[in-house]
Amino acid sequence: MSLKSFKRKSITISQEQLINTEFIQPDQHLPLLIKPAVDGINLATWTTSNREWLETQILNYGGIVFRHFNVNEFAEFEKFIQTVSGELIEYSYRSTPRSQVSGRIYTSTEYPAEQSIPLHNEMAYSLNWPMKIWFFCVKTAENGGQTPIADSRKVFQSIEPKIKEKFLEKKIMYVRNYGQGLDLQWENVFQTTNKSEVENYCRDADIEFEWKDENNLRTRQICQAVATHPKTGEIVWFNQAHLFHISSLQSAVRESLLSMLKEEDLPRNAFYGDGSKIETSIIEEINAIYQQEAVIFPWEEGDILMLDNMLVAHGRKPFVGKRKVLVGMAEPFCGQ
Image 1 (cartoon, rainbow, N blue to C red):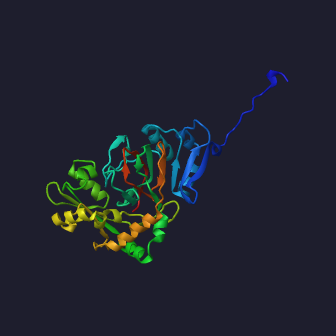
Image 2: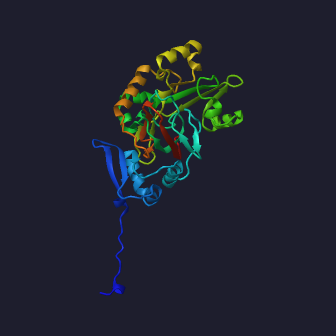
Image 3: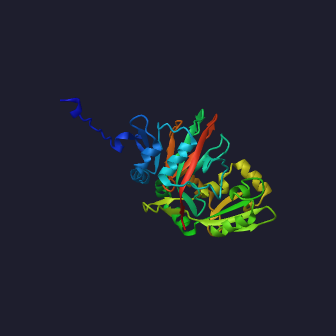
């Protein structure tokens, strides 16, 4: 056979052959772990050809960790999010301190390293939230600093029916007081120094507001305790009553604040939707269920954790040393 008649065969590798899937913990199907099967795979490029498959996996498992894809820069992280879900959304109507890194990429919540952040769904204290949230581990802590996650479907199923019925009937009222220097200032929360813009935002979002004096603002908003996922039809526990409730404060901090302020003047608190108090014992039970359902895995630098924000809650463990985890959000959803 002459060299001219020789034809090189083209080898086609299916998209599934380019990656390997497994579970970080064999007995636990959250999160799904995706790693490249061959070197040099660009995550954003691979995602472009596999968006539909990826969407199926995230709706099934709720959370995916992408590992060993050599994502090193926040720009690559942002591009990956855009490839999956289009434009990122701004972190508005804030509840925790964060810094903007670039565009709509933010630092994760900047609470002191010795504090843990309880499991929660992003912006579940409002009527609007991102359907997806991503975390990019730039630097692991020397010790601790994991991002625990929990299936919100299992949390809902584990809560006692009588408790669920009460929350379903009454919903949750979040009360926030800004301007005392004890929590986020309203300028930070609403990302403006213009009071008219704050008022317009509140009206559009069904948030009751009251200027108590020149710079002190109080807001009240009644929101869902549970929600139905728009794509899977599953019911999830979806609120932040356990984060806002007065019992979430350390006892010394709580006593100190109550020695200076009336309960209705605390920086934040949560009540039933009719304004009645949520029993501390119920909040404790809910916290215990979150702990029971928590899945904790070690970060590796370069990891990206992608969550369906309604299906899976997230938190943070205390840590030692420097830790850098970036956050991006997309797919805004209105739960009204």
